[in-house]
Length: 161
Length: 156
Image (cartoon, rainbow over all chains, first blue to last red; front, side, top):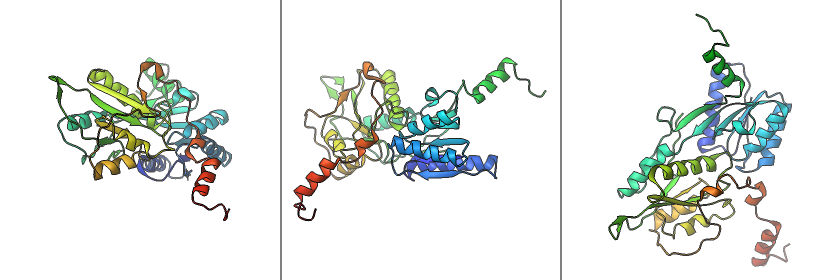
């Protein structure tokens, strides 16, 4: 598996570490390759990194920042699976995107606005979590996971009693 | 997974707070982003959130403008900080100058025309191209000009 990150800091670092932890919890024998490109916006560099990772045997890719649009294009062309981040990235490649971590900033913006309107400036840290709705998992309905979920719901896929 | 936002998103700017002629002033936000609002990443997620907030509060109560592809100019958030916005959102990269300014001196609110500022309208949603990776770096002309300014032509 390959992770294409911009700079090893902030939410990119957290996401990468979380993804690695998830992979290793699922399969301790899996190999995760992480590349920090040093750029948030270098689309071509992200694409080249993805190409290199796939050539080295990566089946699954993910990444953060606006540069990953290049990596998604390569993954789509090469048939590698992609996990998205920030927004639902399935529309770019419905065939290969499994799911995306969607960041909902309104969870932080609402209290920020209220604080400012009350005259309180700064000095408050807001967390975005799955629990408070700041992070959501958008499953690609057209992908394998989405179709599997739909199949279980409508009975096309039989599960154990 | 938690996501800590401190220093990442919102820089509050001081402004005269409440009433003009007995009516509450709208909450104004300036959004400065290094890419585009349809970049399928951070900028789009923040833009979507601002649109959602505006839909909740109404355009009379919440207004925002945005400027895209601003990574070439770290001074741009500073310029925003001199305008009558109540808050500025910016990425971790372009926001630093705004943070510094706010922490060291209260902003003034001179009204001026800002280059590259767009008032958010529904018609502009999703129509911008993806930002160019090249735009982050100074051009050769810029480098040469800087060299010339520093009188290093002889060294070159």
